[in-house]
Amino acid sequence: MNQISPLAFVHPEAKLGDNNIIGPFCYIDRNTVIGDNNVFQNSVTINYGARLGSNNEIFPGASISTKPQDLKFRGEETICEVGDNNSIRENVTISRGTASKGTTKVGSNNLLMECVHIAHDCIIGSGEIIGNSTKFAGEVIVEDNAIISANILCHQFCRIGGYVMIQGGSRFSMDIPPYIIVGKEPARYMGINLIGLRRRGFSNELIELIHNTYRILYGTGTRAENIAKIKNELQVTPEIQHIIDFAETSQRGIIK
Image 1: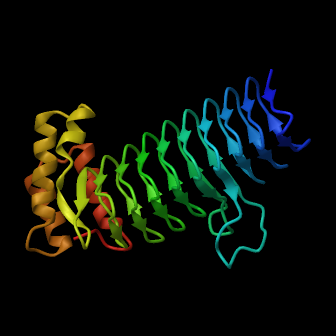
Image 2: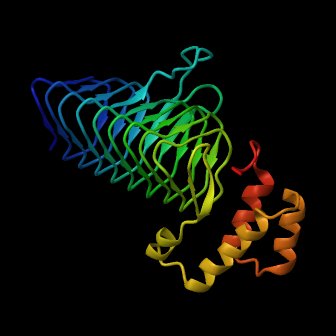
C-alpha cells in the first residue's frame, strides 16, 4: 500500500507500484510510471514521461523528466527512464528526451548529489557517483562506475568512459576514455585511476596492462599509429579492446 501525503498531488492517470512513500507537496504528473518501494521526500516533482524503477530515494526539490532545455523541442512524445536503487539528492534535474533519441536514461545504484543536471537524451550508466552541481549538456554518455566530482561542466555529445575519476571543477569538450584520471586546467589526462581500479578488483597485472596501453596511446605517434602499436605489442584483453574501440570511434577526439 502506498503512503501518499494529503498535501501531495498524484494525477489519476499516474501508474504507481506498491509501498511508495510520497511526501507533502510532491507532484506526480500524468503519463508517469513508478515502481515499488520508492521514497519521495517533500517537494519532489515527477513530470510527464517519467519512468522510475524501484527502491529509489528522491530528495526535496528534485525534478525528474523535466521539459528539455532545447529550443528544437516541439512537444514530441519522449520519456525519461530512471532505474533502481538510486539516491537523487536535493534539486537534481533530469530532462526527458527530444526527437533526437527520444529517451533520457539513468541506470541503477547511482548517487546524484545536489544540483546535478542531466540534460535531454543523456545516457547515464550504473554505479556512478556524480558530485554537487555537476552539469551534463545534451546527449552525453557516461559509462558505468565513473566517479565525477563536483562543479564539472561537460559539453554536449561527449562520452565518458567507465571507471574514471574526474577532478572537481573540470571543464571539457572532448571524450574521456575509460580507467583514467582527468584533472587540472585545462582538463587533461593525469594517469590511470589506480586506486579506483584496485577497489573494483582489477588485478595488478591488468592494471599494469592498462597503464602500458595508455603509455602507448598518449605517446608521440598519431592516434592511429599508437593504436596499431598497442595491438601489436600488448595482450588485447576485453578491457584493452574497450580502450581501443573507444579511441577509434571517438567523434570529438579523446582528451589530451
